[in-house]
Each structure stands twice: as C-alpha cells, then as structure tokens.
Image (cartoon, rainbow, N blue to C red):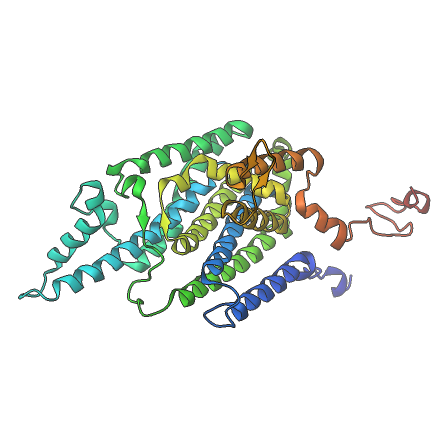
Length: 420
C-alpha cells in the first residue's frame, strides 16, 4: 500500500469550510472603514459622534447575539439569561471606570489642602462620592479590586464564565432540558436583577453606575475620538468572535452540538459526553456575552439593573429568531436590524401617523411592532432574514453527481436515482 493511500487528507481551511467568514470579515472591514472616513474624529464629519456610539453599541449587540445563536441555534439550549452575563461584564468594567474617575476628582479636590492627602482619605472620599447617593460612605467588599484595571478586565471574563459554569453544571448534570431549562435561566436572571436593585447590593441599586463614557485621565481627548476607539474595539471583538464561532461549528465539534440539538438522547446513546459539550458551549457564550457588555456600557455611559431584567434576554432571543437561528450571519443581521430599527422608532425619528381618531406614536407602539414581527417570522419565515441570504447568495442545491457512487458499496447512487 502506497504512502499516498495511507496519508490522511488535509482538512480544508476555515474560509473554504465556512465561506461566510471571509464575506463577513470583508463586509465588516468595509463598514468599519466607511464609518471611520465619515466620522467627526478621523473623517469628514458626516456621521455624528452620537451615531458612531449607536453603531458601536450595535456591534456589541451583534456579538452577544452571536453567542446566543451558538448556544441556542446550534446547541439547542434556549437560554433566557444571557443578558445577565452581558450586564455583569458591564458592571465589571464600569466599577473601574467609575472608581478611577472619582479618585482623580477627589485627588484634585484635596490637592489644595495644607497637608498631602493620605490613601485612606482618598479612599474615604471616593466612597462618599460614589455611594453617597444610596446613603453609604464605605466601599463594599466587592469593590476591593476596583482600583485595578487588569483585575477588573479579568473579572469581565471570569465572573460570567464561573457563574455559567456553576449554573450549567448543576442544570446539565440533572439533565434539565427544554422549557424547564429556559425557565431556570430566566429565574437566575430575575434573581440577579432583583438583588442588584437593592441599595445594599454594593452596586448603587437602581442608580447603577454612571459616567462610564469618560475615560479616566483622558479628559483632554474629545468624545468623538473615544467613541471611535470603542467602535474599533467592538468591530475587532465581533470579528474575532465570528471566526471563533465559525471554527467551532464547522468541525466535528460543531457536528456533535448540532446532533445534540436535534436528538440529544441518541447522541448520549452513541457515547458522547453530552453534558460536557453543553457546559462548554454555555460557559463560552457567557464569556462572549460578558466581553460584549464590557464594550457596550462605556459607550452607553450607564449600566443599571434594568439592563439585566429577564425581558432583555427575551429580546435577545427575538433578535436571533428574526435574523435566523442556526446561522451565525443570521444572528448578526437580526441584532443589527432590530437594534437600528429600534433606535429609529424610539428616538423620535419615525413620523407619527395621524388616523384622525387616534395618533400612532411609534415610541409607544415599537414593542408591539417587534412582537408582531417575531410572530410573523415564526409562522411564515422560520429561517428569518438569514433565509433570504440563503436564497439569493448561497447555492443550496444538491451536488450534481451524475450517477456517481455514493456510499461504502458500489452503486449506492445510480444515474436513475440521481434524476429523482
């Protein structure tokens, strides 16, 4: 037997196994370049700084939608709690932004004192500035590392990842599936949200963390430039996450998680550690959601418990369904489409419709329109907007084998069978 016969065929590159990766990265690069050229910071100023922030936040929502599609569209786990991980990532980076910015303000205010301020005086001043709004004057224990950017960045990944790991291990080892698992994830989100609403939670209760758009020590840098930095960071994170998700779903691992989605019992019967696969995907997507939140809230400027409420995770599922779950590009399209449309309708840009007896104000009716869109997509277009991409841009026809053999035995596919 020759060496050529024994040689293992090389696996084709990711771009050939998943052509949408190259297309997506190209479109994202062109979009990023276009926004940069049209921005106020580095371009001709046709796009305002506020709209650049809107586009940057939209990219972050596309990133968390990508995570949701991986866990739901590919692995079949309908999580109604992933926006909790998104919010945790925002709180983790927001703690450092608020602490450091407040510290600089306190240091400047104490600079005129006859004696240099001690570290304890500075710490007390920071605590009074941040927590005076909730009637406290001391930093809670969870703020012990708020002064350290590297540690808070690590928390952006570790806290959502550990929470998902513990929750997933408890749920999956008990073989909780389907709607029961969805209810559990929603209960987790509700419990976390209700806890954060309390003033003694250590995160300022309903007030949340504010002023996050101001980067400490960079007061001289205009917001137009800062917004572009975050826009670039959001685009880079989305590109990296898309490559990672495409690599996961295009190989054998992707085949296993799709099989778990379609028939979990049969995959377990074949000997695969189903719970391990599900736990890995659940934890990984929680980390991606946390990263997305850490990039989103400095652009939004504020994070509060309302962002973690269960309704936010339901919206996330709606975005993925409208875009087309089980398609990475579908999740991105759905999140971008709904996010930008929501900004248009709720931002007062959509004109009101006067019916004579009643005036339709889209600010009030947007949620109803979104709900109707979800129902329509579910009933009439289950593949979502991504299905249109399949129809017009991706050739889904069966390969023309011209009666070639298909299978282990000769004649598995004959000419007359190929014609059927």
